[in-house]
Image (cartoon, rainbow, N blue to C red; front, side, top):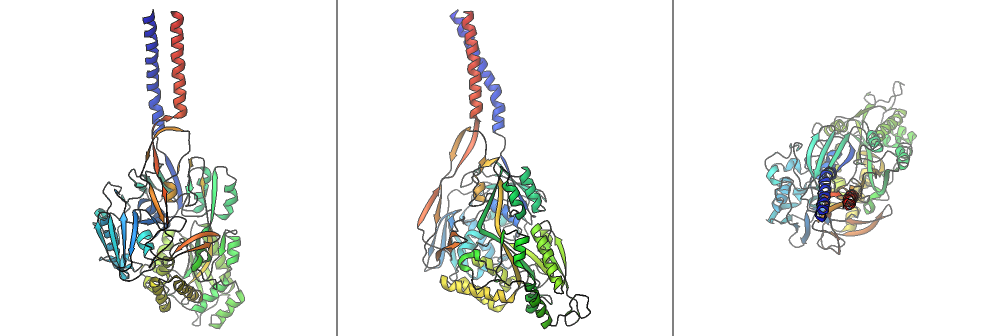
Length: 634
């Protein structure tokens, strides 16, 4: 009898194990399902080539595919990234970077100092330099040389104030084993780009999306999401509609339309983030190689016709500020010249200026003519699908019509507008620029130095309005080599004064950074760095029940925050829009404190805790029932 009971209990255990074996594969399969996060961004893809790419949407993706030697978080400090440290030799004018150990490219090849050497020499010392070096770095960097697999040295020809921005943050490291076989001036890199960033390329569907996947061997640890899909949209409105519908989890490369902020705030699953310390400038550029836009007085009349306050109030609903005329804005802290304000609308003055230069209405049809009889009829380019751009353009056209300048608004895709403005096929054009918190040289030099203003017909990526002023050229070059912060600021102040006087562009407003993301599918978003930023996507994880897991902890990432300097760097604590900010003048050789950020990732190997408990209860009930039945029989 006892043997029979033992057999029965044994059979019950076997049955329970069989049941578990049947249930657990399906649960395990559910647990192994890919975690997919979706980001929506308006715009187009020009290429995935970091050396020639211009479009914002493509730039966002390039930032996830490629890495730089350093990174600058929201605290505005230079921090180690691919490089774990850097030092400066004041006497020899050298900067030495030490790379992290065991860095890899997405194809498994090692990333070494040789790749760094190759990348920068490609820009400053190759047959491609005339096309690639749009910042004229070759004038300041003598050479770049790898000392060993982890050590690379940059040798300067002379002190260069913004050096750390360009070599540490702007230009990502490229794989020599791939780029040495292509023409970097034409290589679109859209087939299968290989980088070293936290996400690997999977697929690009033109006009639809870009699909990326987590890079298992990333030095800072594998992202906690398996796949990232970046949807490409033709309009900002459609991005926000999909966010509300739950079709995407976050937005990038845009700010929330002001009129939609109240609606989004009412959605319990959407969080709106407003960052007063970040902004985007919107402006209207003139084609300075065409008459009468090459006449300063004509440009000034146009400037007086525009009411920046009205645009801020009616188009941006207060989520912007009127832009200062000197290009540099108050949000840029110590670099902003407070003596530079902006012209208030004065239609009477605008018409008086036009009269004074002989631009009058000779036939009474309401449209002025130049002294040679040519009517003032022009086009104004704007971006289709961008509500703020379209509305702003129509409002400006109406004001110009009031002073006798007939303007037709033409709205095109970003790619078309960029091309037309770039080659000089336009009269006036609207455009926007981010990066107001960037190194001031990067914000000024490429856009206002005459070296970036080729003749009409040749593409100009930044100085597409073709501004050329020898005095500004000289000042831009002086501030690059001036290591005394006070003196450098004064030079930048003078540049603003000249730009405000010359009016190569009409700055319109500085748009505040307003973004949004959903909270119902993912958690651990980093609002401080931006929900869809690289640093945020490294830590965001799916929302869900507790999971039985095995956890692998990657090597801690030590972030060194620069606060002092010797020869090349002056770091100033300041306040921008109420936010404490570190303004770094140039490179540094000293640090005062470090923060260590342990980076971990979790690889799911089991079943959820709830499922495990449920199965255990079922097994226990079955076993108890069988045992009880056996006991009764006995």
